[in-house]
Length: 601
Image (cartoon, rainbow, N blue to C red; front, side, top):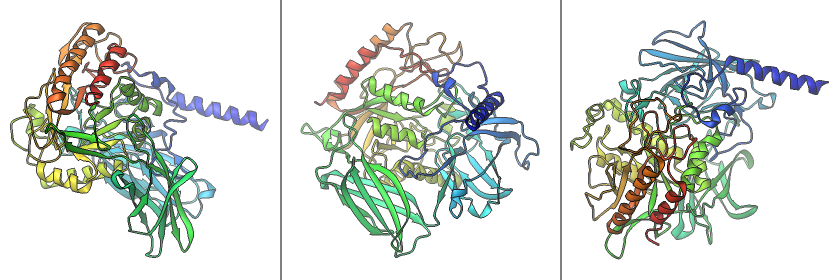
């Protein structure tokens, strides 16, 4: 009888949730949109590089309100919003714009399990765009700026008995301010897309001891069979220490112990190297001890791989992976969804684009002026694909407004804008520092908001000397960093050459094919070149690929094709925006892409 009552309760709760939420609008949607369950949305653990056994997901239906900026907490809310989908998206159940003159308010309640009593409770946000103010039980406890990186607040002192009240206020100026925003604008057009405001990644709770691990950073050194690991923790004493254990399956490969603040160097003899062809990951366990007792333990993983440049026998500087010449070839990946905008409908959807990219014979993805949730990078680590990570563009630069990207000048930012850029760029690097798939940093795209290129490049290289730095993909060129990056549409072209750095084609292609029934809107769709059917588009792709092979022999070390999917009115994708159709002949693409990736075999 009790079991039947439980099942009935669950069914009633689920029916109530669906009654309060439905996708909004009549635009195209991905196949995964139908799988979104407001009672169990994005249930996967959100931080695979530092996993604890206990946590509580706060995704689901929250109250929301949009009010003029400066207004206090609303007494009445406008309705329900499905977190973690941005308010402008269909899957949020709202699909409304906010704008710089308004603020977005969220509210929900929660309780914590009795077993968490005596623990410190951390409230985590995967990402909130852009300025978030957090309130617990009517007390403002934290403010975070930055739309792409996680943050957390220890809410323990502000909890009361029973039900807790959580309120979040968000402001986002999108393209009216200096903040990094990537392709978001208030007036979508051309290569610029719908704005994203508010919570767009998982919100969750986690119980920890007062002393606990806060960050793990691992760096492989394959030439010496070493893995360096730095562990950060909070509230520790000089006598506290950490232990790092590396495993291959059940076999312990290496163990190292160190007091807090010391780097651990673990010897990994005969290490298995990570590559797209063999994405081997070691399991890692990190334990924090105080007075000889375990006070925290997290699961993680690591990999042994090296990215570098080396001058070849014929004098050309080539990119290398694990000390071997390796041509990197992949699509420009915007990471947008017709139903969720910045947020994929499900974790399966998040991994789909990566899997399909590999299926098509590519070995790399350029993540274009966007940052993904931590799980996306773990999918790349596990599936085996290289990642170039862009810094999202921002600031209202003249270049951005006029599209005059190659005028040879750099944008002059305000001190506030520059400080924010540096803060958010560092947070982005910290987020994916330990992901082996990430091999190239790209501080600037073209000359959008480009400033102090040599200084920013030098800082990036110093902060992470283990990766390559591509100073400005297709932007104003300076002799700095590891890479000279050209953009040329539609066909590949090596129109500029640097004998001291690796030369790459950071964007080319843009072959357009509009497929009826899979379009964001019926008219004004565009591509750099347009074709009427799949055969014509495939022929053009192969033609460009054959041209690229010739340029590889004389200088290119990597190339990026535009792009993975259609996005809004751009129909340059290898897939439609709804991911329902591969627009070109898959077998022909796979064959020619594999030939390009093996150019140096």
